[in-house]
Length: 99
Image (cartoon, rainbow, N blue to C red; front, side):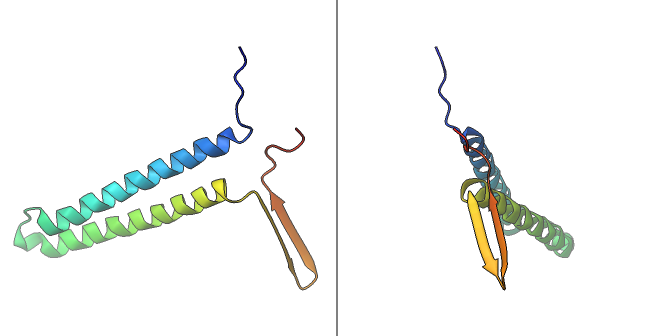
């Protein structure tokens, strides 16, 4: 019995990994926001709490940006070409050619 895999199976696996990472980062950010709004913190630590949680949310947003960039490059970017002032540029994924 031969398993017939899609030639772009790696792209599909990467897309699923990136989507999972995006969901995990979104869950972490929701948890952080819940902690700011509802967790019982001493009043003396209010400024420190906002500084720490704000920094963590910036980190989560940065990582979400990387996840979305990687996801778009993995799934959507198959071939790009451009011409600017007489210069040509083209790039392709290289997967699935020659079959």
